[in-house]
Image (cartoon, rainbow, N blue to C red):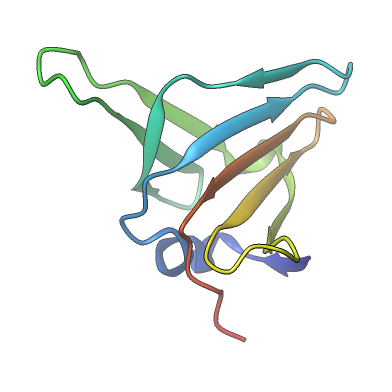
Length: 107
């Protein structure tokens, strides 16, 4: 697991299709049925946009306020060759994991 910063996110996510799993501080676990793409961000937030196969479905937007992010990490599981994940460790104790065919962060 490697610590990364918000400036690393565009290069790591690129245009990858992402899955999202949210683990609550209370032990709850929710996997998003939507698929996501990195939608950019600024000094205050990181934005993700939903992807739908049906163009009639409306796009959802998910914003993660950087003030609520205690730590950002990237890792690749030992048996994975291409898939990796970025974890948003939130100050609330929640953990949001975006996974997909991500790029390895620059050193």
